[in-house]
Amino acid sequence: MPKRSFNVKAVGINPTWVGFLDTGRKNWNNTSAGTSIGRKSNAKATFTAGRYNTSWYGLYSPSGIRGINRVFKIKVNAKKLAANSGSKMTQWSRSTTTHELGHALSLDDNPNTSKASLMKHGRNRATVQKPKAYDISEVKRIYG
Image (tube, rainbow, N blue to C red; front, side):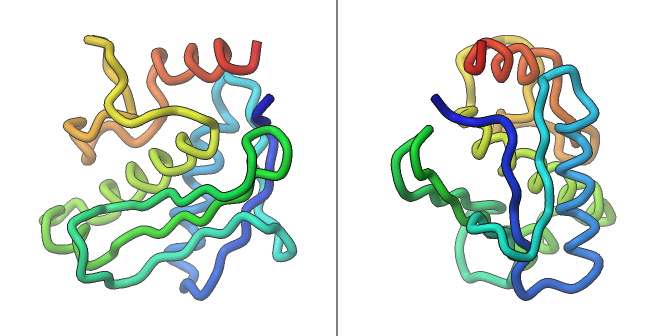
């Protein structure tokens, strides 16, 4: 069984990006989904941001077996975000960070629903920065 409580370590990022990570954690922890996402310097799961020459905004890379020894790395692409967010870089960064943490909670991209979802790639990243009711219900469904 996957876990909705875990810690993540900020790696090689400035205080602005640590703030985005902390906002993403709070966005999940302040819902009724029952999550507890902490930030600890000795966590095996990591979060970083950089200027990558790729097409993705964020990348979730898990390893190990879900529910047993799963760890992950999250990378956020500041270069791609800056190129596409216009004056909304802060909002897009918060949305992307919270979305990637959704993957750590076992949520998939582009869920098959007509309801609003943080996990949809086509969401408005300037306004959808927090988990929506659908996302919260999916976490509850996964964890029972």
